[in-house]
View 1: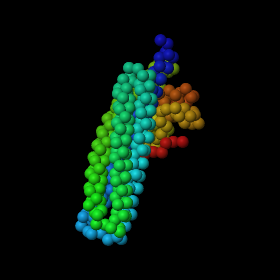
View 2 (view 1 turned 45 degrees about the vertical axis):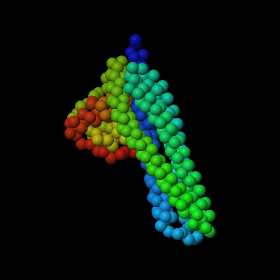
View 3 (view 1 turned 60 degrees about the vertical axis):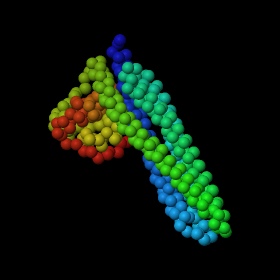
View 4 (view 1 turned 90 degrees about the vertical axis):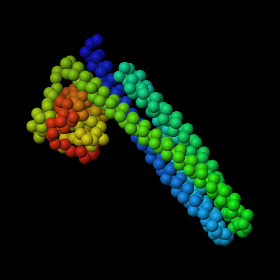
Length: 344
């Protein structure tokens, strides 16, 4: 195989792995959104339980007057509106579940494109589709339960309103309906809590897989840069100590994703953030060609690819931080950890 063909295939694989890592990050965010919506539904339903319990105690303890029963009827009408609003909010989770299923299909395609290197990501794709299926099932069940409870609450409201003129015959009926509503709400809370727990576990699992895939992308990116260097000529690699010794003369470009700059490894103070990806070439194009640039990433693989791209754009003095921010931290050199705005 010719060098140019090898470079092309390695670059395609590295791009696929980077894209897969980005998809995993998006999927983990959807898991968090699922979980947050589920927790909000639990909070709203528990509030309904508290309101129902107070009303039940009032019904049992008092021979309610017509005015009190009218007030309770209005209160229950409001509770029914809250329940229907919670059911509507659950529809957002169902929409996200559909998007997650589509993302899982796309992830499976990317896994197939990556071949042997995409085997681990195929597991993620399967998990994404399974989570989508389970989420939609739970949403359907919980939504139906909420709508049933809302109907019961509305009937209690009507019953209480009728009882405003003759309450004696309706107190027992209202009490029983309230007890049924409370039991149904407890069932909804238990199911929704279980869904939130599973989503939290799935997020942790996917995040771990994403980190493994990102490291794989780093290694592939390093292989791409090394192969291109053999074809076109070497980029100057600097150790952390060498780079730190002449840091003042460099424009430092960190090509990691923005959230990585605020991670435990931090970033070199004064750097600019241009993530490796489809937009990098456009970001580098307007920069001066005769300025010395130091490219940085986590391990040195992505930055080596970015340095090769800069070389192809005609930059004259290009350096790569060997070992990336991991070796920089091992050397005990200073870092910053604040989140940076992406450079325009």
